[in-house]
Amino acid sequence: MSDSTPATPVVLDVWCELQCPDCHQALTDVHALRAKYGDRLDVRLRHFPLEKHKHAYAAAQAAEEAAAQGQDWPYIEAVLARTADLARTGEPLLVEVARELGLDAEEMDTALIDGRHMLIVDADQAEGKAIGVTGTPTYVIGDERLDGGKSQDGLRERIEEIADRLLAERG
Image 1: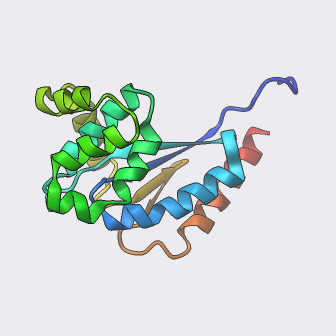
Image 2: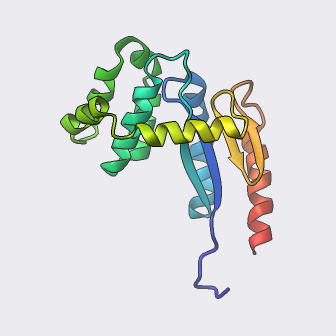
């Protein structure tokens, strides 16, 4: 590999639910990991809406619409910052956040009605179940699954250890 060819980034899948307060807290770790690794770490949000949260499935669909409009992480972070509001308000909050970020709020509303992103959310959830995800946040890096739903203590350090090892293996 020449010096001009960037190495393939390490992928960190974050199985998340946008009505989950623990996922909101996990953003601190996500920000720190992004700051440390930059484009050497590809942080991907994977949807895992939990039945106990009434608006989580709609929020996952809304995040996909925000991604289609080019604002995935800003939208995800804005919704996670308002998990209590989402629990109270539901779908109107999802459209309001879209409007606040300058997204096409009417298109967001339409996407929630027509369900155009349901297959993506369903596929993520099915894959999560298949690999043993039971709660959120859950991190998958390399071939390791780390459950942040029970405790997030030490998880960032463990993710960094795995990322460092995988990056070293890639040269």
